[in-house]
Structures are given as C-alpha cells and as structure tokens.
Length: 254
Image 1 (cartoon, rainbow, N blue to C red):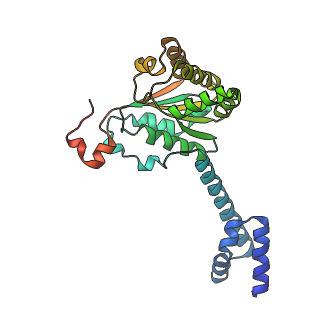
Image 2: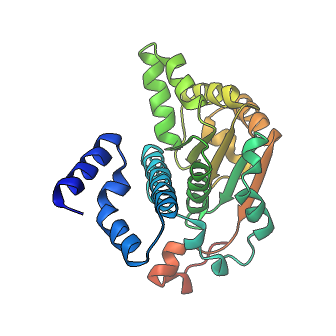
Image 3: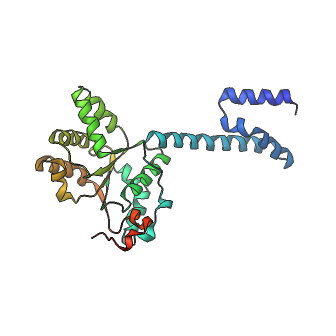
C-alpha cells in the first residue's frame, strides 16, 4: 500500500473522529496482512476496538467530571485489614441494584477506616454502568448552597445536585454547620428523596447528627429521609493511614 493511499485513509479516519483506528491503523494492517485476516474479520476487529476505545474515553471523561479526590477501586481496598466488614453487603452494593431501587448508602466509621475509598469505588462502578455520578465534600456542598442562596440562585444549584443518579456526600460530621446551612442541606435531601441514590460517609453516629446540624428538628428530618431506604455499612477497625505509618501498633481505635 503506497503512502498516498495510506495518508488518505488516515485523513478520512481523522475526519470521522475514529481516534483509536487512526492511531493504530499501521499496526492493524500489518497484523491483518501477516495473519492473512479476511476483510470482514478485519473490519469487525477495527469497529470492535474503536467502540471499546470510545466507551473507555467516555468513562474516563465521566470520572474526571465526577470530581473524585482520588481514584479508588474495590480491587485496591484491603479487605483483609477489615475482617469485620460485611462483605455480603458490599457485594450486594456492587451489583448497583440500590441505584435502581433509589436507595441510599451510608458508610459509618471512625477516620481512616476506608469509608471514602468504598464510596469512590461505588461511584466509579456506577459511572462504568452509565449512571451519572458526582462527588463532593459535605462542608463544601453546604458552602456552595449558602453562596447560591445569598445570590438568589439556590433553586438552580439544588437542581444541579439533584439531577445525578448517584451523589456522593463525603465527611458528614467533620465540621459543624449553621442552622441556615442545615436547612439548605435538608432541601437537597428532600429533592433527592425516593428519586435518586445518595452515598454518605460519616464519622458520627446518627444520634450525634443534631450536634452537626445544630438543630434537633432539622437533623431528625434529614435522617428520616436518608434512612428510610438506606443501606448502612458500619466499618470498625484501625486507621489505614496509621497502618501505613506503622503507628497502628501503638494507637488503636476504640
């Protein structure tokens, strides 16, 4: 095949946006000629790899847009360090049927036990199965709602967070919020209630949420909607961070 025809093929591939085929056409043709692959099998191979590449690019773009603080998967989670973790519940969550059922997930435990890791892993899995997903820290979420409220853009901001099939709200309880912030948080939870799934991570038992939201009534209303259709995963054990430093020999969670 002369250079003129090859350049024409590559130019057409570029115009059509067939990025993977454009980047690998020399290799594909070389293998086809060397292995005497017939035309139909060759075309099938090109389309299959192009589709696979496009799906992967879409997933990667969605993962970036989800704003995960880091990339965590179930394969990277040290289940051996968490012998008390209910693996049957984790495996059930990994089926993602909780999303179709519009159920919530709460990962509850002391700092460093892997709550955020598991939440991100579920989020990435959701994206891989074409569920729109977004991750945000609870304090940042409330600050964004407060700002939108003061700028008369609250409804727009609530709609933005309410639209995701899966919303991950990380670190409830690490910082207290004002009553105004708690009210806005409740409005978001109410908008998502029985419509979409929300994943929460928290270091506070539910009885302590009134201290976080500064109001018993608001806290009760938030918990009522979150826990109505919820999978609560309580994680007990030592901190992974202390384990990695070696300090877990001296310091133990109680």
